[in-house]
View 1 (cartoon, rainbow, N blue to C red):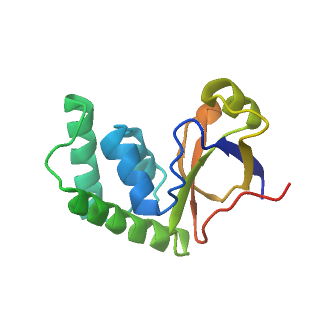
View 2 (cartoon, rainbow, N blue to C red):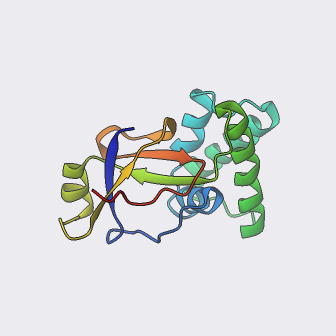
Length: 147
């Protein structure tokens, strides 16, 4: 696999569990593009789930937030998405992690040689912002590489 990088000093929480990472991305940061990418890349194929995702994406884009779901409902929603992604990927995706190239981590996320860590990527790409980073899905918890 390819090696990419991240720093926890920018906004890292050390949280890697799929549903928790995606809840933060969608409901705190408003990154509705992730919903669209999962559908467009056919990582989610359940038609009822797609309808729910599209509706949620529209609400977030129009209002800037989605306020009608409790935290438990948000986690349950992402668990349904995780199960569908796992079925499409043919493996049990449990974790998610944003990674970027080292120059991006330094330039955009303020990483320094002392706090940038390297990780192996996954072939399950949940979201790809190009130079801004890629959100990968993993079966096993991604840990920093020793090199």
